[in-house]
Amino acid sequence: MERKRVKWNSPAIEEIRVLFYCLFMLLVLTGCSPLYKSQTYLPEDVPETWPGSVDIDRLPVTKNLLDLFEEKQLKILVKEALDNNPDLRATAHRLRGASFLIHETRSKLLPHVNASFAERRDNQGIDGRTGKRRLSHTDTLSLGISWEIDIWGKLADEYNASKQDMAAREQLYLHARDALAARIIQTWIHIIGLKRSVTIQQERLAVLEHIQKLLTKRYTRGLENPDEISTATSRVKIAQADVSAEQTVLLREKRAMEILLGRYPKGILSFSATLPEVQPPPVHTPAAVLLNRPDIQAAMAKAEAARLQADSAEKARLPELNLSGQLFREAASLGNLGSATSYWNIVGSVLQPIFDGGRLQAIARAGHTEFQAALMDLRGAVLQAFKEVADGFDVEQDYRIQVQALEVAAAESEKSARYYTARYRQGLDSIQNLLIAREQEMSVKNRLNQAVTGRLSNRVDLALALGIGLTDNRSSIQ
Picture (cartoon, rainbow, N blue to C red):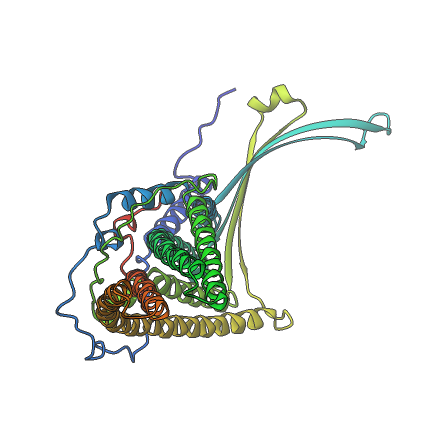
């Protein structure tokens, strides 16, 4: 028997060619849609400049948070914390896990292809010769394809919304990195300040113990009364308690630093006795500051994600175009599948929601409401950012005044202490006046130490408020 050849210009083949050409064009048009661009939702009332009281021109220019100081050991500790801090590493792992989920929304834009194998046995057939039921066995191998054609951009909106949500997560991760680095720097400053405070308290204790010994000698000579001895002893014991309290706080801060570094909290970190010189951060325009802050960037990304989700929910009310097809073979046994005849079918369908009890409309309205809420969250973050900057400027100015005043007070209190010490040794003044002078000297020194450490710590907070973070690490997530 002569075998017939299928002509490529036959009606059946021509229909298949046209169908696959249409599928190819739809896939190309879906993949070549215009590139998505996110919007900027900064409020329109952002001021162009900062208040005139800010002396911007005299502030130095730095690139990132680590450029504010020159302490090499501190920079090493910051890097160690970024590499080993458990909370930050956990956030990084969750961020990486969330990035994998973006493929789930991306996959909705592409055709889904599935292969299946089925084996069926039944006794529904009737033997024509005997009239009895007969057993039948069928093996089916099939390849199916299904595809929702995104003609309105609904699935693209969902995909872009997931990318914006991922961008917000990345910015929050960077914000956490900046905050961790700032906390390491501030803890370092605080620990050195506590060491200086312990030294001052020990110096105060040594002065009080010396005065107590002098009073005791004078009492044995009959030159002092018992009340003076009791008062001196009380002050010595209080000073001992103050030293112990300061040392305990210092040990706890060291353990806190070790936890931030990802180390076991032994409290054995060693620090220099010199405070690092932290420079004031650079000051840019308010709009530039907002765009440099990762928390503001995260809020803007969340607002854009909410808008895209709302648009997608609105488009879900439009007709939905679906395309599905199947290619399969059936045979009485598994070995005969290779030579079995192939069958195919293609189904195109359009689905238009008509009545769903208002479900889709409610989802769309909820999406637009969530978008408005995200805009308010962004505005609140912007206002909080401006407050942090204004507070940082005010605190910087206040500490500048405090440090200048306390430096003068410390110098004068030292002069006063030396004056009363000399008069007491010459027998020209009482021990009580000397005690008051030395107490005043120690108190002023302690306040000056607190003001200096507070000023340095505030400069780190001000840098974060002005969007100065670990900018060299914002290009990639490790």
